[in-house]
Image (cartoon, rainbow, N blue to C red; front, side):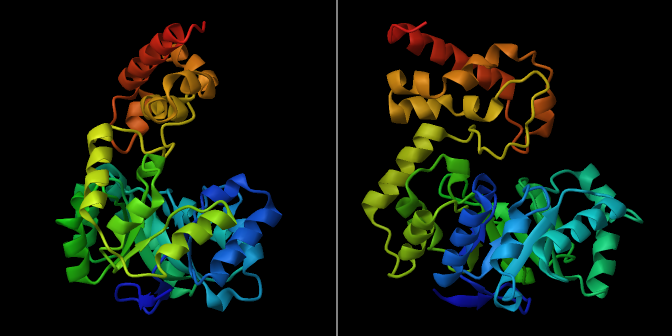
Length: 343
């Protein structure tokens, strides 16, 4: 594992980070084991958020007594100063620490959001005061909107930017990344597997390792998954023509209109299990329809509850026409049920 400085900060981080959403699925003891195993494998950067249920508590337990050996990043989606401070104080308590290395304003994707953040008494004012008090070392920002992310970078108010990047969603390499490098921001990569749509880890990381200054933060939920991805860093990266062809097959299959499983659309007020239902087309192509019909039976059965109220569209950072896509997938599922002789 190699180590580098994160942008212009004085944070020395491993070239591979740990995204902490998946550890919410694990019992506390198992989560601690996975986190400590990742550290033993050389990972020193851990990205979490106040909203990630008990992930901060598990991180705090895992690194108790060795806080100075890891770099911890957390986040808030609150736009007001009081709310952002409430989240920060809760994060400090859960993480069992008196400072957070990088605290990020999460998913700032629209101009109204940004105006709330920078308004007097807004979240940015509060985080700057917390920084002066030593509770935060650096302030970063995350977004799912490339245009907005570039606007945020240009303000030069942040030390890092976190944005999706993978071989399907690679536009950031042409504008966002060069701008961030020019202005000295550290670049964090979320969605290295396109929200789970890329199920070939070696291929995903052959692409990502072409950009060694990017700090990717895949989610880990097992010792085996840590071992798999850290193993890629034990040898030089080489991208073959066969690899490029494999990436192109994924692009053709998914296009640009696909669910990244970020789950911002949920919960649905009518009980539709949106996220799994949004992935039916891909699940069916990879599992075969007979298997997929049963595998995703419960979520697909909830799709008729959709009233097209539009709340999920408002929440989606990718502006997906979710009700239309759900109905398309449900028709496909019904056709597969009939073809398989199931009712």
